[in-house]
View (cartoon, rainbow, N blue to C red):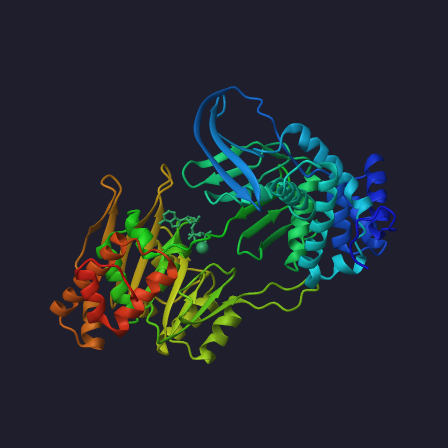
Length: 558
Ligand SMILES: Nc1ncnc2c1ncn2[C@@H]1O[C@H](COP(=O)(O)OP(=O)(O)OP(=O)(O)O)[C@@H](O)[C@H]1O
Ligand SMILES: [Mg+2]
């Protein structure tokens, strides 16, 4: 059993592909075909493969608009496939077009490839056992790759090894993955990929240019639904007419949300939020003017002395990124626990850290592990610090405050646009914690996304007074694009005085020292999580030595 590329092998999947081809010709919908095949007892993965082999998924359209100006052009590769990206202003289009092209695969080659691909399944004998066992899926991919490669070599006898390899990769992506959508996933400049319906092109959110229309179009609503179902199956979730919404995350950390018709009225939608390959660090934030070195020093001071902190902000304002960045400041000798719905946080790898994620119920409705379950459980794992993805409900908030009261420092995000809104959000339903509990929190960092320019900034940095009211220490001035000092701190200084025994003067000295180190991090361009973490570890274990290096503006040899 397994894969061989001999034409004579009787392929189990041949029968499947023939059925799919025939049904499609007769006008049956993909969904109906799938249902029929599943009823007949075929494994879902085998059915998907057969459908992918027969359908083309999406199409890379030739430009049909009049180009006015090329805004940017760059090359990327997706699993060895060389691609060219052009961002162009087109006549009559309100947003620029994101045009991806397989730079080295000409139209005629593409036609041949498409023929090979459709032909492939009848030439490749994929054993049923192989494709239905999830543990073997990478094995299947390897075997599939090998078989495809043999065919590519046969059809393109003159091609060099490199060409053979990427043509093969391209075909495998089309057959086992999400086709052209995966090409977009390879562009590190894209934050989000959105399929809204098969009537309009796929949209992308570009770091530099915001939302753009691509030249990729889904071929049918059924294809989108099919991709959603494929993703769902990989993560043991179901999406169907009965359960038309799905929130999941892929192996690599990318987040996926899907909503099917008729809930989504225009068409089946899939929104992919790409996982940041390089997590944000404080160095990046200071360098890009997200916040000032002095604001960052204050946050660091708070983290060092175990003050619990909330990070607020609107959707995609950078809350999780900030949570990640403040994780840089943790000392190396403490136990850290993180709880998230999807795995986003990336701390320095040498920290004593246990990352946990919630789990949805499986297709039979069993095995759910909620944020609350994990939070309650975490208290028995003796953490010093607890990071919580997002607080949404009363129970979570209660356990969180309970954790603070029992001596843990807690860092969590909450959806609110300002300090005041954070307080209101926390004290009203559905979270509804009594205001008297709020002083357990020391700091609130509010993140903000400029709706015009798309830039992210720290909007407010506040402390909570003993009566539960906030005191805004720094506030963003949008005209000057700087974070400005507002009110003098009362509570934090008092807390540090009371629990750490520092005078105000000493705290000021420590803040200046921290600011100097942060500026040096920027100057030396130390911006990778592990590297920033190592500098912090040095600070906590051998500060004098670190300061010597910083004062001489030398490289860090830690
Ligand atoms: N300071 C920043 N400067 C530029 N881009 C940023 C900054 N912070 C975050 N981003 C980018 O903004 C996007 C959203 O960030 P993030 O996921 O941290 O936001 P969020 O507020 O947690 O979103 P959500 O509401 O979906 O949880 C990501 O692509 C991230 O890389
Ligand atoms: Mg987030």
